[in-house]
Image (cartoon, rainbow over the protein chains, first blue to last red):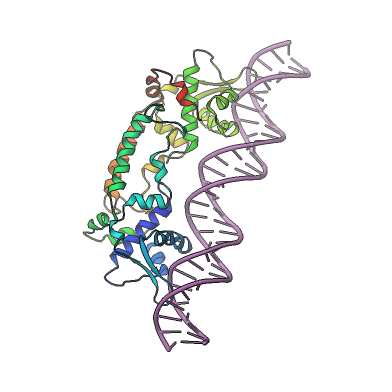
Length: 145
Length: 145
DNA sequence: TTATTAAAAGACATCCTTGTCTCTTAAGAT
DNA sequence: ATCTTAAGAGACAAGGATGTCTTTTAATAA
């Protein structure tokens, strides 16, 4: 349902946001170690985020990744389309090419309702929203076991 | 989100149920042709359904697949676990191994609500329920384009 | 019993996601 | 200018879902 890339992306962004006061730039090595995420694979995910303008990066000495003015307002749905799962919201559960309100598959209507809720959630939720939940030991919850 | 196997399974079962009055046994060839589904792959899916007792099959001359007394009461969630997507209901969206009500990830709570609805839907819906929607040209909606 | 039929079983290829490694590029330190 | 550092780019491998083909097994017809 949700790819690993998506999870890695969200967690990395949140990590950068939470660490922003301590350091303005954070290296890939630190992120992958702290969050327990495969380093080289994460590099590609981060790269996509940078290209999309969701994060900033600087090469070379004292380089690294950082959030920018846009980051906190990015909606989760944007990150989902980057990592390729937004099609989930439109694909027919029964894998029919043609399935819509006029020619519904046998579960179309019931599934459509729930889908709308998911879509609404990820269209409205931003990175900033997630950070607001940062009451207590939030950082710990980013780390994979 | 939902595998092709799942879609193939549901559609095949519904096809068998709808054709029951015409023929008591239907061959793989007919199903795969009518529903536009890859033949050999479908064979494996059907085989799982038979092993699970959801469908019956007879080998050899005049053999084929058919529904049984159990079929209509089978819940969609059972077919989902056969085709391997029921784990979707428990896996953390951020791919964290440890994510629960006590140690929630940043989106845990909101996702959990929606998940419960999905789970409830597929735990309650049966093949028979889907057939009740068979008001008009339902069969057409089983055929992939 | 033998031939035919159709499912079952198993080998193999393909595609996509994930994961790993090496080389290149660019930024800062010296 | 040169060296060091860290991101970027590209090649490659592993794994699972999907798709294809061949061989085996079992049921019926003859």
